[in-house]
Amino acid sequence: MGEVIRWAMAPVMRAWIAARTRDYHTLPRPRDAPQAHAAGINSDRILLFGSGPAVGWGVVSHDLALPGSLARALSARTGRGTDVDVVPSPAVTIRSARAELAGLKLWRYDAVVVSVGTTDAVGLISPRVWQRELQAILDQLSRSTSRTTRIFVLGVQPIRSIAAYDTALGSLGATHARALNDLTGAVCAPLPDAHFVAMPAGRARTPGRIRTAADYAAWAENLADSMKGPLDAEHHNGPSSEIDHDGSPTGHPEWPGPEGARAVIALGLLDTDPEERFDRVVALARRSYGTRSAAFTFVDGDRLWDKSNLGEAPRVYPLAGSVTAIAVRSPGALVIPDTLLDPRTREHPLVVGEPHTRFYAGFPVEAESGERIGVLSVFDPSPRSPDEIDTVLLRELALLIQAELRRRPE
Image (cartoon, rainbow, N blue to C red; front, side):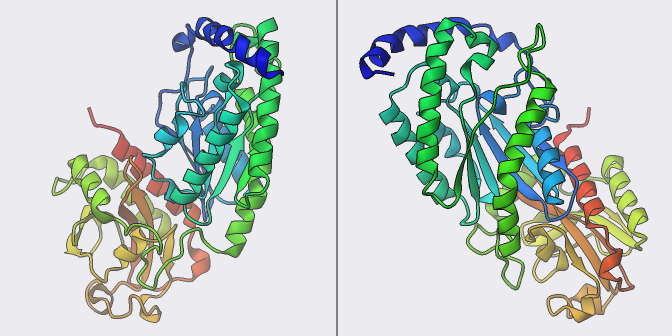
């Protein structure tokens, strides 16, 4: 597209966008918790950010939208679990994306997926501005993520596959979108951790629907194909967060840290009575693993406090040197088949003294804001074989605890 034509038509196209999308606020979109999960061990944590496919137009659940579809598609390819957090931002543009990304805890993720550009493409943004802003976003992500995080930038989907833009003017935006996609591919190509993913058109439109679950499933399959290789390579090379001998992640803020402490306090659950909703999950964990004890434990400053405790362990005990302190800082499930054989735990008071814990397995529990605030644990005075422990189930039970933390009792 010639620069003179682009300059002359840009105001017209921006006015057209405003008219075509005026009623978007009436369209269905997910309003449930902005997460999706797929079962498995050694889970990949994904952040999906932006507009367009990330928003979930046309469906009412993130499980039916791109987050749930991507979690299932990626786990089917990797054999690992997948946790997808989504930050949908219908109005985000290439110019505003950096400000919105700045407040997110990006270092927590194995991959960040950025979806932006439809409005920019139809508005005929200057290619020079697009390239400059995209490079700035990638630089920001490089600084704010861990050194092993992979970045995936979604291409602008074919413009006329979007019902609102399926007109003659939409063809002008479609031509510009293809040029922006070429630029995005060129910017990402030399960067080892950045990947451009072309977005195909959605499936044949259903009358009266803007998007359907089938559209998101197809997009997720396409995206998962691109993500599998880079994520597999990272798991082959080692975990995304290196762990010190005491369980602390190197290169990241210490967990649980001040933000975790604030998140615990904000829940308003410390030093409250047991609740059936948590006891039910803890009892299921104890029964599933056949252990004498199980607990759901909060980290509260320099102490550990059990919201739910079924067994013989004390309800309150010091954080320093505890097995649970190691578990809350672990990247996934912590399984210690025999605590007397592990140098981290063999001298702990609850190992050498009552209740003489010999086997321990725990999975971190997170607040809605993402901080690790506690652990779901099962433990027993008899050691176990590592082959006996279903860490997939332990993760699923920890996710049930997290769901209860997000649900406010009536």
